[in-house]
Length: 240
Image (cartoon, rainbow, N blue to C red; front, side, top):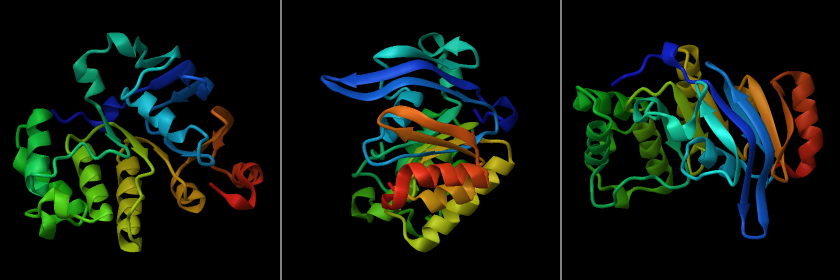
């Protein structure tokens, strides 16, 4: 099951809010993600970036509002539609007792890929992991674990990628490799939405900027010099 980029999802959050006891993590979020969008979500620590990504990936559910995929409420979406996106978060969803290759082969079977071994080989090469394919996942550094998690999310060639701070733990060469990979995927027609604590890195990649402030969208627009100035004005010298 390898969805084509032409099948990219249209994702829409309508009036989304998320509460944790007395804490409001997100409030009044209205966000439309169209096919082939390349969006960076920026904001200070605690602004709601991770909560938003986890909600869009259906890892957690909203306290208020609704999420729609291609005009269908997420609660009514068939599994085949949800399978068209890939998610990388702070948890790897990988198994310490398995090797890198074994982990990816497991997910290839889970995704129902006809030639899982080939799909795994492609992602091992793309993420610079071929030489570490036989290593146990538990023995990898933080950066290598993140690269394997990204490979896992790309195995089934999703049309929509949701990445929560994907550069966390990556060294400079790995960040550049990821930068090139995301650019290529976007050029192929993939829809990408990622959060970043590195404002410069995010702005160098994305074509659209969403800025969160205290759980609300403070800015949403094309990545222009004016948008970058607005973001800088909101974040100030402290960045994120």
